[in-house]
Length: 225
Length: 230
Image (cartoon, rainbow over all chains, first blue to last red):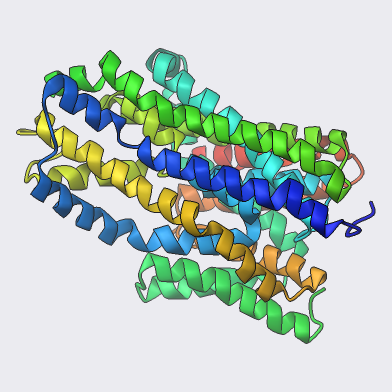
């Protein structure tokens, strides 16, 4: 593969610019489309969420998740790239779905990490995962209760409880094979911080940027390539 | 509660929940088309794009079954249209449940309990919506600035940029795993078995690349079943 013989100008024209345009527009439209169900409650049932309580609820929810609005996009960006970030933060399920799908697409196609090719291939993997995700939630919405009755209970329980941990372990295994020297640090940093009960947003930041910092040191010392 | 769920499952709720689900589809279709237009500029062939798309689909089957099951549970609490809308966009089930509960808290009633009327439900819906907007708005407005940041951090050293991506990935998944490592339990068994089987499977398929796209899905299933028999 002729790796980085890429026409920068053309790349900007056919990729970066349209990616930003599509991303910004769809994200801002999605902000507006978050509220129509409330309009329905008002128009048909005459119910408006009371102002004071709504502001209280906003403060409460922002105090729980507000830090993640900022920390998550920054932490996931080096992996997802720009288009991948727009898609992942619209469609959600980032850790259990988008990141693994992006990584596997890159692994299977065999592109070199961090390249423009890798970014586009990873984005394509994420696109595939959104399609399956949408089919899944739409099936659940319309025939979910009936379909779930067909699963034995212990199988349904296993999926509910163990899919996420199993996939977290598997992806960690996959990347530890590439950079085995970084793996112990990536576990030790968050474990230490969890032990002293640090806030979760800090644990994420420290795990990601701590591991990157150690990678930088090792790279300079020529311990990893 | 039954009265509330009747409103939550009404046709009007379905119709007003649908647009944001549709925009997620529109967005990926636009990117799908753009990827094909850009492929040439980065020397990617259509077969490679198809392979990436297929891998994304195959890899997501397991996690999507989990989302499916969790969502059916969520439907009984917030109604099918809201569950459908909220799980098609940012914010997984626990996040949405937390937001809905905080909405009820602000009204001074117990979520889904006595006194949880249509007004309280409206506050729950508002809280889920405004919480999701936090991510949507910040990413919509500022994500492209992160590209500048990455360029600086990468410093044009393509080898280092690759290591940086790997390190970020190991860091994120180190964190995600660490939360299951504080006690010996089903999730820990699932994670360890998942990790070991992934490593073994990747070694096994080294000379059989046609099976590579199934490795993560298979490792996930092995980890899950190991935890079941724990």
